[in-house]
Each structure stands twice: as C-alpha cells, then as structure tokens.
Image 1 (cartoon, rainbow, N blue to C red):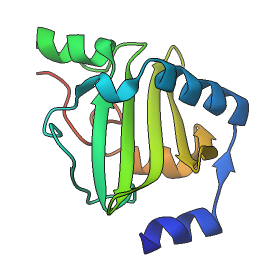
Image 2 (image 1 turned 135 degrees about the vertical axis):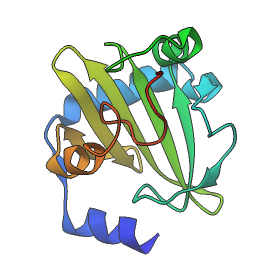
Image 3 (image 1 turned 120 degrees about the horizontal axis):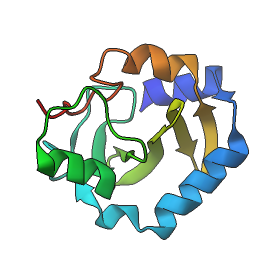
Image 4 (image 1 turned 30 degrees about the vertical axis):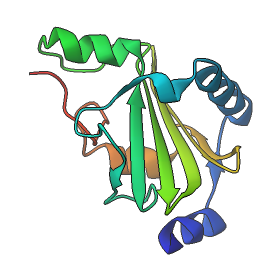
Length: 142
C-alpha cells in the first residue's frame, strides 16, 4: 500500500524496540492467530486505515472476556492485547499490536518483523484518540 510505504519511509518512532521485540515474540508464542477475532472482524476485511488494504484483528482472552461479559466499561482492562495483521493482497505487510498496561496503551507496529513504531508514538496516539479507550475498530461494551 503506497500510504503505508510512504509513512514508513518518512517516519519512524521506535521508542521501545526491545519491548516491542519481546511483545511480538510473546503474542507469537501464544499463537495469536488462534485467538478470538474482534467483533466485526470474523474474517479478513478491507481496511479504511493506514494499516494496509485489508486486516485481520485478533483479541486475547482479556478482551474476549470483557466482550463476553458485556458489562459496561469505560476502558479496556489491563492486560488487554489486540493484534492486527495488515495485508496487501495475499502478502502480510505489517503487524500492529496494542497492549494495555498500568500506564496506558503500549503500541508497536512491525514491518518484516522489525518495529518501526513502539512505545507511545504520537502518530498512534493522535489517530487512536478518536476511539473508545483508544480502540477504533470496535466499541467498549455498553
């Protein structure tokens, strides 16, 4: 996707590359593609975001439980992890991860397994500020 390639070529804000590597290893060891899919993302669907042409979104058991409980939340619980695979046709273009920590969300976005954005990059925060507790793809339970 041209926009993504331009974004990566022009900018990078890799504040915590070691934490980002560890997080990617963790979600892979948890076999994240076997996790529940995010609401509305039961299968790959076109994306209207800078995260590629099409996306798959997976949520860990913390998010899945919060969604299943359907109790109103003002924010996602600590330990929530959301993983987005960004696709360009049949090619995996990027992996983006959000992990809710005690001090807020930790973001990481990887191209060819290398983080280009990690920590609390302004570009992630600015865009995600429009979402419910920074999640734009699906809402908090109400």
